[in-house]
Picture 1 (cartoon, rainbow, N blue to C red):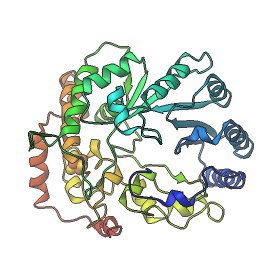
Picture 2: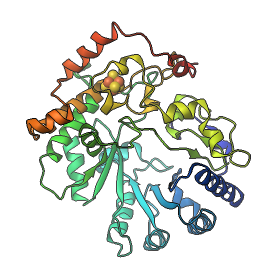
Picture 3: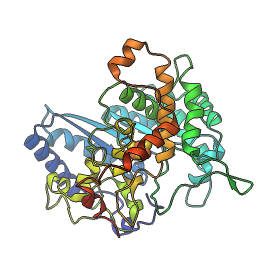
Length: 396
Ligand code: SF4
């Protein structure tokens, strides 16, 4: 999020002050009591959250337990680059019950292309050192999961096998955050674009090994979620599906905003004047951008509304729909890739189900071309949704 053209973070404190933490926890308590919420998840993000220091987390978690009523289940997670992890940190994660996820993009070559330190040096070695400390810690009950941003120039099977060799239990592959004004690169060979679904094809190469592999194998959230949604389960997942996104981001200055990936849409795009020193969480949730983000898998553009796999895809990740010309009134910038991977997974599952299962689930085989054709046929006779103006409100 620091490399997508938004520099508002330069005006914010590096770490949240005690006063802001206190205000945050009181707002959360009020919100849970008002709406009878019984579970609340915190996820510590940065920058690099470990730079805040151990005392910050000790105080934060102790205050959370003191301020939030005990009948509300509170969980803590953290997304870290892993570089600073030591045995002492693992002891603290155990003491405070913080689950950790480490950002690592695969092999040394794949990772070090984008994950570099301030001097431009690749961070692979340091990340894996931290990962190994966490994996070998006798204190941690759960091995760290991995968050991996897809780099289509890397070999997918090599990346997957690399994670297997590192003995990770869970990998979360995510698409790089892009908008229609800055579309993802297509793969060019000899100057000719040879394929237009590089991300879909990259994921399919991993899926085809993973799906038929004997367990134990790592959980891959992207595949697990698609399979569960195809099988009719309600899966809250910001990247796909049909559920609401129930996430807010609180900046170190107390600003309450919609998801930080929206910073890719423009400098200051997420700034809304709502701060927890003077506002309740509901004030942030009533902001138009937060409403759209929260309901993004239901408030789809016309093309997505006509798409036969919309219940699984849900238009993809909301920020990836943005185009300066017409805001969020678009399919995902990864529409073709998502069509490719979702149809591939659906057709693979169908091969494993009985006719009775297929009938009760109401799913059938779809080729990539059939989905595209069915979408365009329906689009020709379907009017724009009446909420389209709201999706376009954020055009610039
Ligand atoms: S596959 Fe494309 S058209 Fe279909 S729901 Fe997803 S983004 Fe929309």
